[in-house]
Length: 422
Ligand SMILES: [Zn+2]
Image: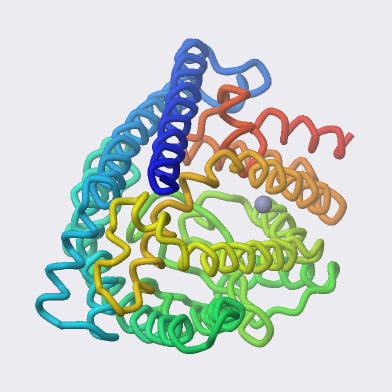
């Protein structure tokens, strides 16, 4: 009885998510196309009509592609759950391995492999169809497959031991296993943040110390002015994959570093680079990064507690198309984990606007920080260039933007900065 109710709830949330997503996408398409004929007045002097129309077309193409992948992902989700995909997969593996840890790890690995294979043509089309068409793809096919091979190897090398630890805790650590599992998960994430800049990211990109002396001393002066300690300024060869540009921080503590994409450095003036960096430093000095991490850790503790409860409920398996008595006397822990990770996004989707709202608040604060420590006009001109280069639309639908966007719309952001500069 409970399982039927849970199936109905699950399907209702899927339908609700689809309706909201399609409705928002339709609004976005209508809004962007309605403003395609003219550059908004406040950008008219800086952005040519052709660039504005490219941004509109790129936004339309991405939105449509998003709807296609949404449909496919929903079908895959239903295929794994209610249509019996996971149940079938589990039985096949069980016949090969028998019960035990090997069965559980093999189930997780097989699931990851199958999902990866389903995603592959879509990732490929995104890079060599969509991005290529708008001139953003800089990657050859060899690099695409090399990246995939490295990611898969890293995923297996890190994911399997982590899964082994968590599954062992689930089976042997008693009722409060989820607290220990959460500690392991949190520790793992912190460790990755510390190690990734030196151990993992160099497998994908080359990082060279910033060589431009004039720019370097300008940036070092800024870093000193705002009181930030960094282990170096690096340039990353982002141009070998994409024409999109960015700047970011990585690592923390002793591995903290600032990284610029070479594509960004090539395009911005030194004072604009300084302003962009001041914005990023704002995120750091205003503790946005620490707050976001703390929030994620608290949330994941909550999710672990929910999983701790669900794992004991037969209706949770049954309601998602898996027989809870699949392996009599055997733990269904790997299955519980899989089902939970699969269905969690369905139930949390409607909270996305809250996360977007929090993120946009931080963006405004970081902009204000940059305006205090550099010239706000430099950040404005840098933003205009970045919007143009990335073909980001200047005219998003306000509701679509409020729901999804981590950054405020360009016009709102620039209006605030101009106020700060005045
Ligand atoms: Zn930001």
